[in-house]
Image (cartoon, rainbow over all chains, first blue to last red; front, top):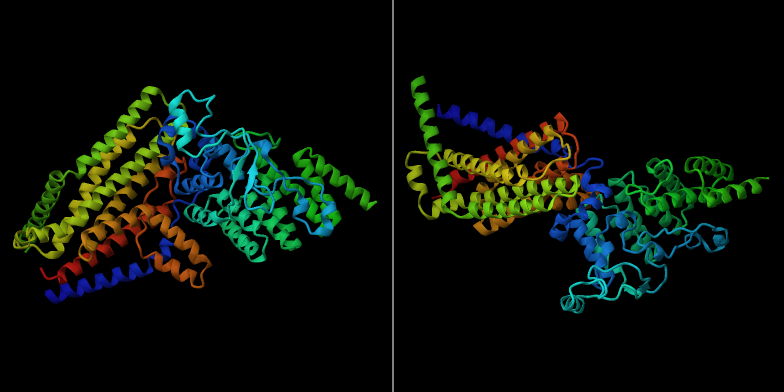
Length: 339
Length: 267
């Protein structure tokens, strides 16, 4: 009886052991957290939620680990001064850092192109999602405009307590230009941010942007690897393809850059509302990036590919987006060149 | 023969009942449960205040519901962590294990009895916390009821696996180390596994690494709270069956190991 029992137990143990050994074959296919959309990822819902009293009371607790890291990087970039837009997901939806619209110091296409082709560039757009100036200084000034979390004396009803708050915490008058520290030291944070949430597109964008800032091949390659990872997890993000296209172009890999811009433009068109109307779901930054992808797809096709194809895609894109002066001018130019 | 088997079964149930009663009395004697209930009540108080002020929009209501469910998950696991990691060491320290084993009770039954009782107490406390955190939370935005059922089943499975792991590790590790390891596994495990998996993808033996990592229990797979409050549909039957079998296999393996280690242990 005992022998029977021990035999049965042995067989059970062997069965269990084999099941356990083979279990990763099933486990690796389990992905309950992998889904498209969702309220917690939707910018509009996040925006509404973050403006509620409950969310304000809970402060950073409501953020994910990745968002907390993002807020920390923002504080670092602004020398510890907290700006209100840090908490505005509308503004953060695609650009990452916190600047007012008027603050966009556009980097034009010339900066992406080789020296000899710079005079052809006629398109201006902010390609760096970090919206940091393309100067060589590691520290630079940022234009005024964005409100600080701690209000100014004029707006603060707290009197002496408000004054104390402004003196104890890092603060500076938002009407004055403020200092932007270098974000290169923040690269590990962007890495951690994307590791903890692989769907954090802005983490990939800004991280890649800072790597690009080094202007060295090794770092540019690293940025491409970083963006590839982002694309693997967010295959529909046209911004990531756009950024990869920019970096690939910096490496003079024209053919690949051309393909990346095409992919980015196609994805952007799929996401763009038919009239391109700015809304909570389709922000000013989304529209800017979409237009940039479209223009660059046409421009790089014209410069490094076939003018006829460029003309065809330009017409097709124009038909979809209805009107765009830059694209129209490109088409005119190509027609006159053809003639 | 049948009558003897029947009386054996009865005795087995009675012994398990004695072990279970001991575990429940221990939980009531200690103050952990009360502390967690008080914390839950603080959350309820907050919710009541928010109700008074008024919930501005369904998005905020949904967010509060997510918070409530996450708190219930968190508190139930904290209680399990404290409970499962001290069951066997306390019995050994206080010599309360000897009268039990002298009943006579097989060591395997002792472990199984402890696991059943700890898991059951975890499930009961989970429902208490869910009552505070979820039922009292404001209205929903039409989330999937089927997914809610799946979520609750996976919560229970997670607690069962967690208590088995807590008992098993308490046989190998000192109490505090056990608590830290369990805490890391259940609360940060998902993030750590994601990081390792991303790193492994770029490594030479990435696939092998990914395979090996799957042998460590990943509790984040059982937590569908955000999926539920995100308004996503239920899991496919294949995914759900996969998660169930993953939980069952892991729990069975950990329990088997716990029994084997305990049987070889000198008391």
